[in-house]
Image (cartoon, rainbow, N blue to C red; front, side, top):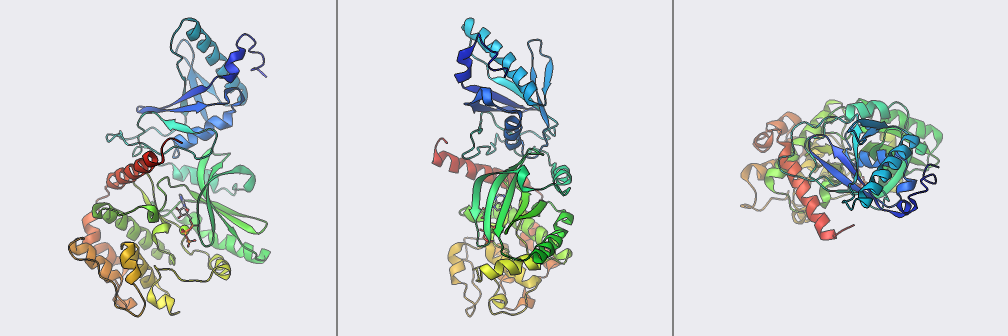
Amino acid sequence: MLWLALGPFPAMENQVLVIRIKIPNTGAVDWTVHSGPQLLFRDVLDVIGQVLPEATTTAFEYEDEDGDRITVRSDEEMKAMLSYYYSTVMEQQVNGQLIEPLQIFPRACKPPGERNIHGLKVNTRAGPSQHSPAVSDALPSNSLKKSSAELKKILANGQMNEQDIRYRDTLGHGNGGTVYKAYHVPSGKILAVKVILLDITLELQKQIMSELEILYKCDSSYIIGFYGAFFVENRISICTEFMDGGSLDVYRKIPEHVLGRIAVAVVKGLTYLWSLKILHRDVKPSNMLVNTRGQVKLCDFGVSTQLVNSIAKTYVGTNAYMAPERISGEQYGIHSDVWSLGISFMEPLQLLQCIVDEDSPILPVGEFSEPFVHFITQCMRKQPKERPAPEELMGHPFIMQFNDGNAAVVSMWVCRVLEERRSQQGPP
Ligand code: ATP
Ligand code: MG
């Protein structure tokens, strides 16, 4: 090992190494590594993947003393870089200079578009991971360019399997399973993986896999990206795009101008699903995900009847967002999704009032705008047929008012709430 060959500098092995990951045109993220000499190339790609979740990074570069860029693509090249870096650190120490962090430049990242004029920060902290970067400068959360089409191609090529996935933090538990933040080794990407225990026959497993096929065809910026699914023993893992803002259920009171933009995205997502003849069947705040780029996406829609049935065998129940006709066992249709859409945008207090036999709930006057109240009440008409049809939803004044594509509003709000949560939690 080259590290053992670094005879003249044994103290370096115990030193904390700071790697500064440079983001083109904008800033940098400092990552403190406590196990510098053991650091692997993959670890660095892993962290770059957290810092630039939308880019596909396969290598990175560092600069030598002449400013020439040297590419690192393997553990061997990593060792050469660290060896070179530690020799410069020794020089700085001897000369009594401040120790500069090791600067690296991720390669094959999409160049950022517009600048982060609001100085927003991206949540790049990675829970219990040993290799967690801390944000030093502002990152261009709005400008990280979308490369999910590329990622889809890499991931959806029948390549998803358990061996390539490293499970990280638990993002949450639902009735059906557990969702993990996970690292996909071959692509270096962070994913959300939902793991559901299902004691079913091989035949049913095959049926679920084929029903999930349609997800590869779903291509909308309002629907969570699907990267693949696989069975291992009695559990299915469903791999999707990771949304760094999480789901709407954990956000407290959302201002109406933000909620309006979220509602627009949800309506567009539902309209897209309905156009594919897919009913969502589980519209609720925990299935609406947001990210620091201001995107809003739907997840957990009932694309596989068999999967829905198999989960229902272990969990039978209703939830507060279900339409009255569903609770009473009548036919489910687009209108039932519309009810759940309406109730999802109400405050929890009003949710409690919603009992099948009572009148539809009404929002308190004065607190919300008239179009908003009208939108909710229309979606929550007792008679399914009286609820707005898809095109009426899009044409509703509340939706039209906020249908301006202004993702920055949602982005700033998500970033602010995440920042508040982080400062309440204190240092990691
Ligand atoms: P239910 O099982 O009744 O649908 P649920 O939606 O809360 O309830 P899960 O779907 O298992 O349960 O999700 C658990 C949590 O994981 C969600 O509340 C959400 O916060 C988080 N989560 C799910 N998918 C993602 C994702 N793609 N990116 C980030 N967080 C996610
Ligand atoms: Mg869910």
